[in-house]
Length: 87
Length: 209
Figure 1 (cartoon, rainbow over the protein chains, first blue to last red):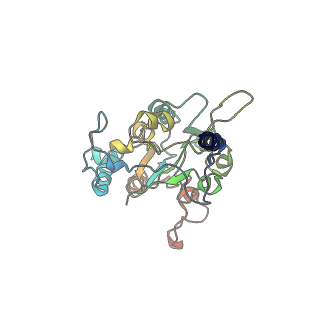
Figure 2 (tube, rainbow over the protein chains, first blue to last red; figure 1 turned 135 degrees about the vertical axis):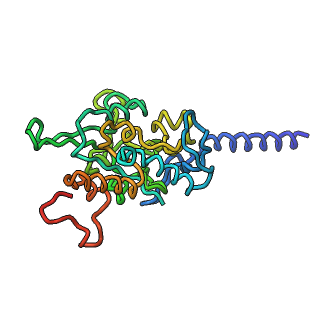
């Protein structure tokens, strides 16, 4: 009986020591840089948003379609040309 | 594919600072940081005074991107140069590399401690969820995701500052130059977007590029 208790105590001591040591483990906190490669978070594409995602969105395009977004932006771009409005 | 560019027409810029105000208002840029500013040369000299609105030109081969020690810059599919403020260490290398003085550093504490770099985003936000509060706080407004163009260009009263797809704004400018018959020099385009490969397409010797 005493032998079993001693084994259990030893096992408990080892487990406690292991748990305690685990607390001393250090997690990598510094980003590992790859030279010349963007390291930040990924960004979403502007055309992945629905046209009505924000207030007062006047332009219309098909969500996820890059070409239609570009076309709507080009149409808006042309408002910067006052010659097309004056003539 | 659209390639976003800025073009400032020095013949038209009247130094009203409307673009500066529009940028400040749209992006709630903090005190001490100027993403856009108006530079005037030959101030007061009749006939020789020229003003130009300057911000990040979103260069084709961006020097800021090349010198950043933590590689926090990226270029979007539309050619807009953006950066991740979570990675920026505020070292200031990009400021020294930029030919336009675009990178700005807010004061982050006592003794001139610099904060993370801030610059014009072409009103395209940054690497956070589009149109989210986080994106607005860190990078400002994301007008491209709303189908709009940069606030500075859209606000310009004389349409001196053009912003948008490079092909479209170059066409607008070309038509304008043909109408008025002068002022074909586009300040900063050679530096930002490179010179044309075709030597025949270069401007005549002695003219500014």
